[in-house]
Length: 147
Image 1 (cartoon, rainbow, N blue to C red):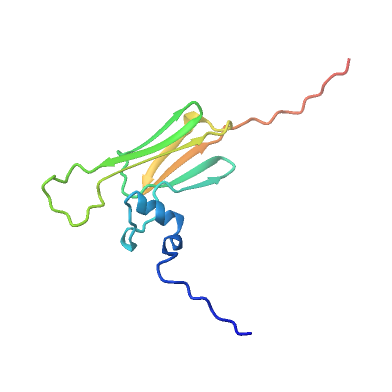
Image 2: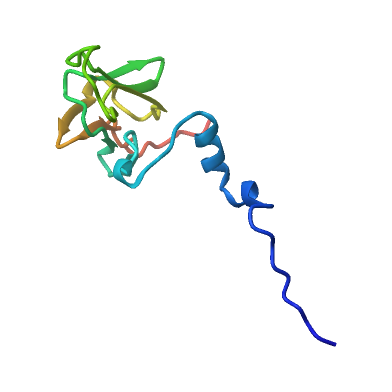
């Protein structure tokens, strides 16, 4: 008995060769290229120490004035928005990717955070938010009298 390798006809299953992300991007008219591959802004690193929680949020291209940090009902919301106000309608672009961008991300604040001592700063496209923990006093040993 001879084994014959089956050759798939070209183009017959071509639509199924794409990944789901590629199909969604193509459907919505977005075609990624190697030139636009950058880390997604809004990526977060969270580190916990004995004294605080430290959030590092990747926000390349956003300045301090375009970034907003708010707290409401134990929810920390980080947002940023920039609009392209410098370009004119009559300019002839071959490709224009610098238009508008915005970002919003929310986190639930743990109960042990001192909301009054939260601080934030932006350096090199990274927003650093420090959520200091409440300093709980250790309870002193107490003798309970049995009645």
